Image 1 (cartoon, helix red, strand yellow):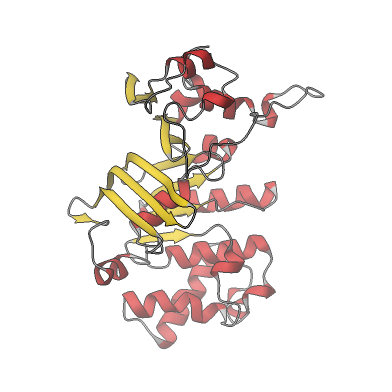
Image 2 (tube, helix red, strand yellow):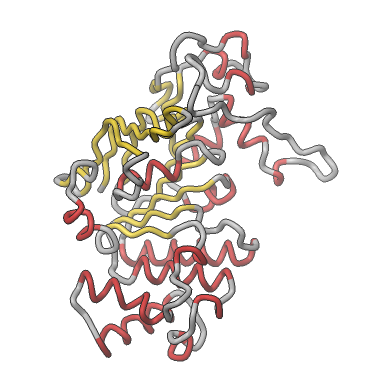
Length: 324
């Protein structure tokens, strides 16, 4: 469905070049859910925005890479006209904050009908009927009345459901979810994840799930990419990653999950902060925060390469981060 190779995206600012994404490669198959995890600023969202041409240029610039969609379209080389035909139709996105993604001045009906009018030429009563059906499918009660409401009249969880309805109304082949459960309580979070999973199974949609929550990853993802400081540090199937995490950063993320601690036990946190992306270290980016490996063995003069240490299990080949 999508094969991304050597994606590099940087932002040219007054304070220097921000190396947001460096040499990132991954793929996602039809019906598969790929998780991209890491701390804030690790390059997760920028990777996805780059694919859809949503990076502001300038200051952003895609320096290299390919993103082959459906075996014949390079999203990184496509014209704006070509991307407009793909965005919202064949590839849809659920953004992190629905309140800033939905237009507060327009009724939900207008915003749900717009993709149908643009991509399928459906207007008027037919588009309204499809929009009402889409609200019903995502569990909005009394959709015939709620379709005429404004975004502020919905709760956070309901707004997120509206975003899901909007993303899926054109039955896309690929759905990108940018932290869709952020700021939602646990009950609503599960409802949203279950809803995405149900619609995925019904439509056969491929899903990219961007999140910092490994609990979410364990519930919904088939394969997981772990990103740190703009690079992939580990990539494996979800089951393999949780059973056999190799990189010290992945192990630290797993150890930080509150549910893994005994009651009353002090929660583990990763010390320090990620390095600045305007002046990243020449060697291993995790060196200064590595408490679960051996930082003295970390590579100092060049970024570690991603190597296959087990079948379909790739990890940065840094001796200090692989040590236990």
